[in-house]
Image (tube, one colour):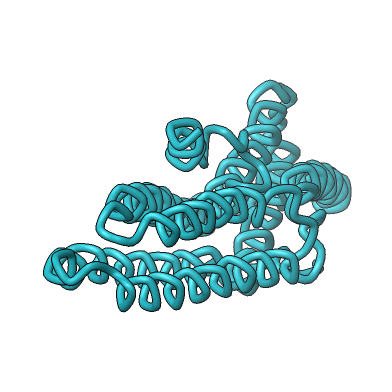
Length: 265
């Protein structure tokens, strides 16, 4: 199995279908193997150890739950960062009144450009390198705005120096900190080793389902048919939480930034 977090993010989109097809295949293989053993040894010579099966399914549920919990935490952390970034830009934009009129126009334009760049940096991404390049562009602009603000603060009126030191410059430092933290959080994903382990466990579980059905003469495939798309959808949810800009509606994940852009005109 290829790493899900390799160079191409197309693998992420295809992963749920790949998991579902693999589970179906292993379920069929388990059923065929069970039928083969019954024909060879007879029904009395084949048994299913329920304790072992329960252990494997329990381990699969544990890994699946851990992966979902990790993805959910990553999503919550990124949503919080987006909200803080939007608030930081809005607060700094409002504090431009302490600077000279010409500097206000320039820096407000830079903040609007930063907002547009942040929104477009992770849109229509195709590879992990696109995420890295987008993050680098955002951080470069944040650094340039920081230099503009510092230079403008030196040209400000002496009457505004106290407000600049107490309000404007701390807000600028906070913006730099939050955007740096956001770039790091965007790259945080569970290791591909964990996803491979989950894949193996689900395939083994599917193999045991098919084998048990054959050995116990259970011909009702209704629950098995439900199990396959459910696991595929479960993985889709996990990957959507890990890659919200890729698999979720863009406006839902970036709602705070879009509202800020609308409010700034």
